[in-house]
Length: 357
Image (cartoon, rainbow, N blue to C red):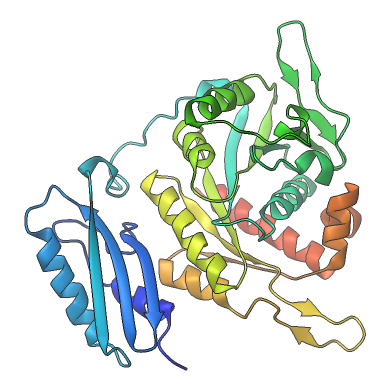
């Protein structure tokens, strides 16, 4: 097997940033990585305020990467950042206040479900995770914050829409399975595109979060839009998150974007609960043959390379897609199926990490 991105990331995770206490990977400095045969191209983002850091760091990275077997040429480009955005605060620093914490009283823990790109089944994972947490006896809400492509009102079988009260507050929908649901799909016409710029998004999100009466919840699961854009950034900066779950497939293009999401959460001091590999494999019901449609083991290798927990594999099952279209999620309808058990195991892993200590 030839040189891989994971080989490079493992080496980079041993190289500290000069003057700091974090390695290049943990600090989120790795922005682009390309391995082409024996040639490695790398873009690093480093703090501009430290004199001489660029030359010394570039030289050290090139030296250590060239020492790897199979590496013939290394090209390192450095991007300078302002000191205020270079990595998360030190571990001993007090957590930064989240501006909208007062808007969700009674919610004990908020867990974000994110993905670096669309099409990896993030919303499906969020819906079934919420239901699996409820089956474990937790009081759960599901906030669909995917403004550009809301879907939870359909996936959760909760299309009737929320109700309001005299104060203008909104009561979330009680969906089957005991999960309270609120989605932008109730507000925006399904056939109309959302064409909003950053300031409009931030104000809409603040009202959306603050106008919903969740009541007492153990967990509020937030289905974020894919990527690291305005919506994800605004919510992470303003909502107190107990942690983030990153959804990916084993496909290389999905894993690249998953790493970007992970680095965003680290920069914003949001704990990463782990990575889950969705649509990991398909088992033929007739002969039992297992096919890894999107590749094999990529989620685990990425989690290991980046130093975060790997929370398991969710297999492909046509019932998952069918249940999402009909508002009958698989955890609700077929909890003992292999995919239903996989979602339950994921919920158990989230509970273990979020409630630890």
